[in-house]
Length: 117
Image (cartoon, rainbow, N blue to C red; front, side, top):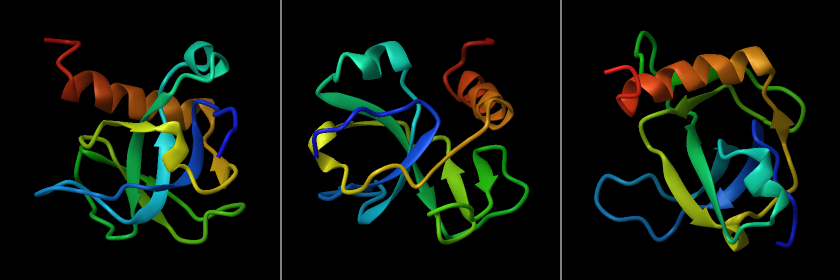
């Protein structure tokens, strides 16, 4: 799929093959890389996968309610940061998170990656 991606956009992507505890299948993913890099149509895209296996009270996830073309309530799995080939995307944008939602995810990523250590 030859398309431009948007930071905060949720798209379907094929995460197979997966290995060990990696999340696989075709599933929604959140684009987290900068729009400056997205505008270059970089060959890889940094994403976080979404899961419909919802878990409450965990700092490692962020809940997204079904909206637009995202068909199920889902958790963004914030500790599964991954770069995938742009060709693994299988849909146009399903929905886009708000700036506030992205800021909450950025806080989680900062903690996970040790930016505040």
